[in-house]
Length: 274
Length: 274
Image (tube, each protein chain N blue to C red):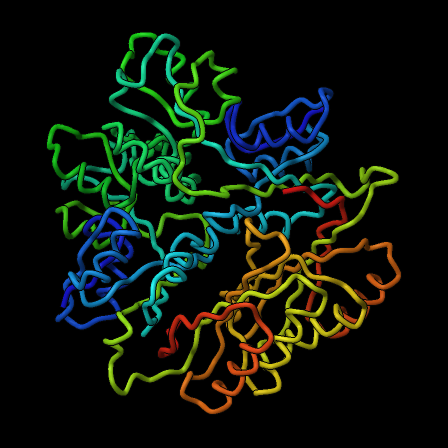
């Protein structure tokens, strides 16, 4: 079963897929998030997996917007701890390393380690891609990459140091989604993600949230986003505990439809573990 | 008056400062956001300016966290439209360009333009930094950068194409902050930013939002963030219209203090224009 992700082999997204699925899954990398969605639309793959928030960097708005545009259904969420590793060609010692290539965010998160070890950071498109490039050039003896432990396996590199980022509690939340006709039977639906738009009046959001409380639903996430084309409206992204098949949830959604300009259900899925 | 920002000369942050302040301001770039805050703490600069949200990329959680750690006061907000330009050394034609350097996010936002013009994107740390590097090497004839129009001025480059990103309505929101003792007298306080933490019970957030409605306060932004060390608590980031010196606002904050675990006031400031 092919599962689409954005990135090169060994990317954190692929780690998330490997942690979540059994061996029957075949992670398939695409350059762009748009291509992940297109591949699912065209049924080249059975599922898509995209990051939607990172504890340090914040929400991945571009991917949430893609889910808003498409008619997919979220069937799972994955929390992956991000542990950056320093990788190098086999036989290299830490003291040999002069330069390290990686994505600018990973370089920034490992800034203190690089300074301490007098290593220069050099930007690349992505973490796993840096490791792929390094693996292809056996002339380079003084270079490393910052990437996942999985990419060390794929590109036959050595992990010189593990967990080198300064920031603690660095985790990324991914969602797993399918075409609506392919929602698995008997899916354990513990958590639901929706978006809705309201006019920007005092109390408009409150009225919506009142419905969640009235129906005994506990929010696990709320985020507002202005709609740049319409400064007098807001879109809210809300996750709550409950299934769309529960009576209190469907009653709440019916009430919300009356009070909002538009509403979108992203999916109902088992709750992921931190 | 020195104003600290993160980035090289000509960065979008510097454009934001130049748009907002009169000629008396001297934008001063630092490599890291942490250094911007340290410079303000040490009074090397009078003010700091950092991006806190982008309409496409999402919230800049790392900068919001820095404001949570420090005791600064937000005295303004700036909305800057992000218009990426293709820059090159003077005399270069678009058809000469084979490679373009920039930050990976800018390259991704201009992906369609690059494909159409058969240009290869090469990652760099930041947009303005790419332009600085290009300006220093007069041997390179086939290279461009994607950066702000301001960086063309600084680095004596030519704008070959303007507004080349695919995404529409790409804007970044910056906040301007000072040490608490330096809040300007007579500051027009139209909007207030706060953060508060509550236990993760059904209705806990609702109870807080009820206070805003009871006191006639209109929210312009709400975002929840889990506290990874404590999965049973959430931090909420809320902006609303009103000044901390208004009676209804101070009454509301008093009530909120009773219902929350902790509360932080980031500042009260004039509302920025989109």
